[in-house]
Length: 151
Image 1 (tube, rainbow, N blue to C red):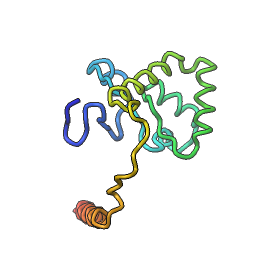
Image 2: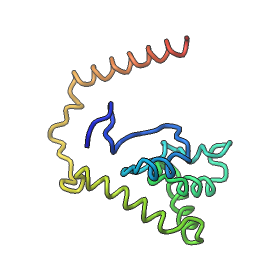
Image 3: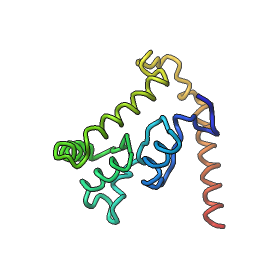
Image 4: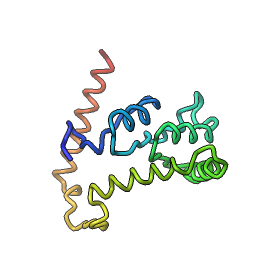
């Protein structure tokens, strides 16, 4: 696994990606071996009114090549809609199998199953110096964003 900027080959994130890109170019032409993850609540925003015609948004995103969907709040509705779409052959079970295979393949490649339990004894994130660094970094980013927006 080699590094590309701040992301590994397995972690490339494309915000606002065209739904044509995912299956056709990334998986087909580029032989992309990772998996495609939606934005946070991304499928809620496929319709012009967020969350309007949610079942269609689920169908469209899965058929377009999204393998993992970030559904933070209405996950029960998502599971019910996806189950309905698969049972009624709107989404082929092969598509679900492909997504599961891609996700598990990346997790095995990253050795996530070797030691599944996290050791919390070395939590440096709670040190006072680390918190101050985080606060100052956020302040710098906020200033840069404000300057950019005022250009």
